[in-house]
Image (cartoon, rainbow, N blue to C red; front, side, top):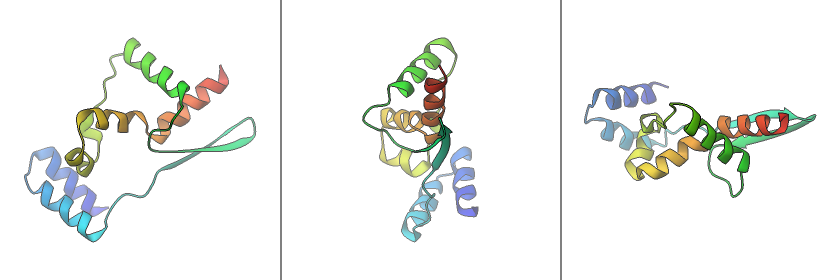
Length: 113
């Protein structure tokens, strides 16, 4: 949407109006919709949403292996601007780690092993 494009442009160019744009978006209730990833394992439809869960050993293992065996490093620039303003780097990394798509991939890899 246009408001997200303006915010991202301000953010990438270091424009201080990014905070104003984010504030206006918050005030007007313009936010992203919840991400839901659906996939099938063994004929059963499963789904994942963004955010941590209490026990996801497959994701923890995948994340550890990717970090240890590749040059991958979380890029906090990919985290939404409003979230960056409210959180520390550790929480931003967790946010990236617990994307629904990554959780679904870990589950698919775990069940195909």
